[in-house]
Length: 71
Image (cartoon, rainbow, N blue to C red; front, side, top):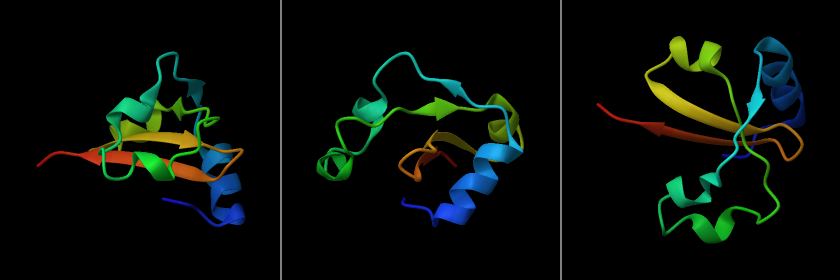
């Protein structure tokens, strides 16, 4: 999901984010991988994930959000 720049800035400022060491592109559904830029630098925030039912990865520089949810 691409965020509006103001929303990406607010999300980046609202939680502590740490870099994801492994490539997260493999977690993207195969039909959507072509839309993920190869230079994406995902970050995770356990504090953000704790308040949701989804796991979120975020690239604040590109205003991209990847989320996975399981019911």
